[in-house]
Length: 132
Image 1 (tube, rainbow, N blue to C red):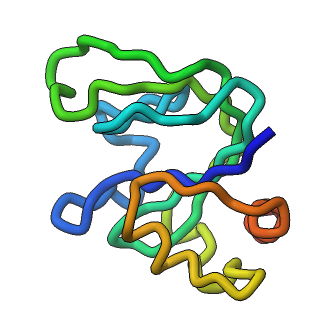
Image 2 (image 1 turned 90 degrees about the horizontal axis):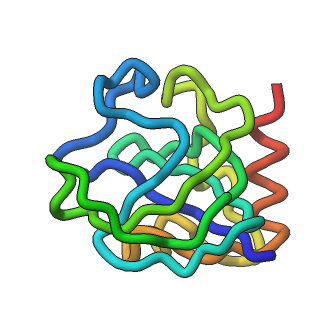
């Protein structure tokens, strides 16, 4: 099992704070421009680019596959996910710098790629910080 941090949104087009109410937002998958190395059973944390906040964790439920959904031509790769009680608003999430452990600044790492592998310590810190 691997642990992942996946960024959503961009600095020029960030997700809306009430992301669950975005018309196109689906809760059972994430997309990417490039093929993702995630596999079923991997753990995933979602990060809102532009907000600097981790707001959900869950489990990957499929291998990466190409989809031909209109309007998503740039983001043709998808993995299915099952989220565990995501925060309703992004501002209710946790700033990424508060969960950076193991001497790595996750803010720097996630700027280089849209998904990065996490250590078990990093994922556990994120998961614990999102507990109600």
